[in-house]
Amino acid sequence: MTDTTQTARRVVVTGLGATTPVGGTAPETWEAIVAGRSGVRTLEQDWVAEHELPVTFAAPIHTDPLEVLKKVEVRRNDPSGQYALIAAREAWADAGAPEVEPERLGVAIGSGIGGVHTLLSQWDVLKEKGPRRVFPLTVPMLMPNGPAAAVSLDLGARAGAHCPVSACASGAEGMGQALTMIRAGRADVVVAGGTEAAIHPVCIAAFAAMTALSGRNDDPQAASRPYDVDRDGFVMGEGAGVMVLEAEEHALARGARIYAYLDGLGMSSDAYHITAGEPEGAGAARAMEEAISDAGLATTDIAHINAHATSTPVGDVAETRAIHRAFGGHTGSIAVTATKSMTGHLLGAAGALEALLTVLALHHRQVPPTLNLDQQDPEIDLDVVTGSARALPEGQLAAVNNAFGFGGVNVALTFTSAS
Amino acid sequence: MALSEQEILAGLAEIVNEETGLEAEEVQMDKSFTEDLDIDSLSMMTIVVNAEDKFGVRIPDDEVKNLTHVKDAVSYIANHQG
Image (cartoon, rainbow over all chains, first blue to last red; front, side, top):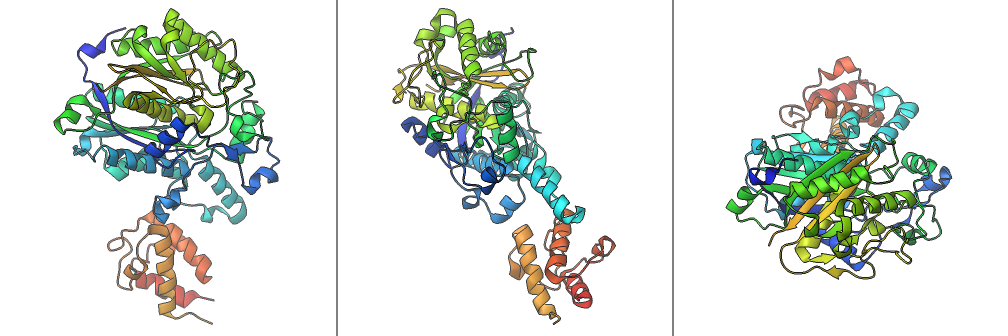
């Protein structure tokens, strides 16, 4: 592929924001993840028993949006939009609220499912009270690009408000779209990430119907166990992760703090099965290889992988094969972690949250542990960080974050350390 | 018992506050919904529907365009309350 790094502008991460099952902010989330704290719990909503759901737990948001947003903002945004607004505002403030012309400021916030709570609650309103009572903001609240649009309005961003929709790779594609926009000169600063709010009985029933979810109702915090021999499916999570991505020269000119560089993007599609990843990992491997070469690096330069690793029996093995395929004999020197063991699977926000955790791993030179890995699957011969966080060495570091989605979508991002 | 115009104004201000976040005391008789209170047509429809529920009146869609100022809505509700 073409080496664009010689000519294209480099892109830096200058702001981080998140609202997740383990924390209401990016620092809170990082602190919980490094400490190995799970956000998974038994759901208390009446609808769990009412619909006799086969799965009674998930990883819901840690901090109620009403604690952060105005009441009217909660009312006028789907939960997916609320989470995106919270994370974007935090990231923007964390970046020092950069001065940038509105026409040079973009938004790229993906969502896998969109405003499912809004859609289904208004369906109830229609049936019970008739069409006149359907909330007039239903359409902008349910559309998947609603969160990106809300953030664009909030920040006055006019370079574009994009919403990649690629199931569980959406958030990573948001980062990729931002990288592409800045490299192409369409924007100097892009607020990028992913958001999801799909802990709804229909979504739980649907994922359970395809036997994708863990059924460990009696021990929810042990349910998300990537790479363990006893893993039996993923745990639904929700939340948002957002970064401020910025052209390097723009960030340097204003003296911004730089967390890391986003230097590489790789994307591929399996064309194999609508939901299952290709079992040998060929497409996922191509995405990783592309992300690394796009960064002008070799596979031997990668010190850390934040894996997609959702805790499904098949998916974790396929990704392992993909990693071996991409890295050849170099996997022994890579510290791999699966943070979904604590956050559950944030679907369209997963790639964004895990990209953010990859950035923080480089920034703090510390790889968070994988929870619940009691007995590693012999088919998964990777150096997985367990127990407690592991320090990364001094010097220039690079890391890869994977995100794969239904539809056969594979996205990999390469981040490099700021110093 | 019919509500007074002041009572209707107070109830309407609550609805506007709920829908837009505007302080209730900003909702005064001589204010224009669009010009002064910056209420768009989508929010106006929700305010109308909520006012119907609260005051037990029916405000036809054709009538909504005539309710440009707060006092128009208050007097319409006062004249049509059951």
